[in-house]
Length: 64
Image (cartoon, rainbow, N blue to C red):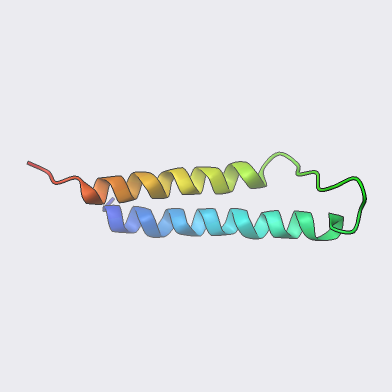
């Protein structure tokens, strides 16, 4: 897999996680207890960001 394709796919994963966070957090915005996230949305976006960083690192390293 090329670094460019890896960066594109990981951007979709991170974006999906951010959308999931917004869907989960929106109904809780008016509550006084704050926002409680279930297991999942933050981890998905975090993994997407880590994969994206790896793809950017791969693109910056020159192969010898």
